Length: 160
Ligand code: PNS
Image (cartoon, rainbow, N blue to C red; front, side, top):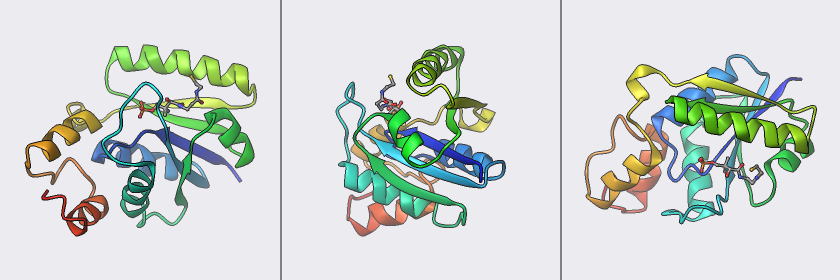
């Protein structure tokens, strides 16, 4: 079984993230969306909230599951028998960053490779940062946040 881990802060998960997960799910037998703690960032949503949003967003994909991790990504991938990490790149700067991350993760776990998907043109402007701004200013989130995650936000009366 070929397993891939798709890691990120997912604060919150966006349609761009979901597109990556769907593309990975078409190639790998199993995809695990790994909701992580990014020590460089102050999150808007708690780890539990981000996990719930991710879980609902991918609930239509039978070979995808979501999990949370507060540790090292390479360890998580090893514990789940994953062969690959899935990352997305919208810009050259994203790609340069992911190249460094791929090298670090490969040093930590040599059998773990990284697959970098180019973002679709229609998703180039979409990011979690943008989604947080829209939430902050009570703007519409359709087209930015997956419908499953949007339903969770609405149920939590976050006025979105
Ligand atoms: O969505 P983000 O915030 O860009 O995701 C970054 C993330 C969570 C994938 C990255 O910070 C990460 O891999 N954190 C886990 C800790 C880890 O494994 N660090 C070693 C690689 S530098």
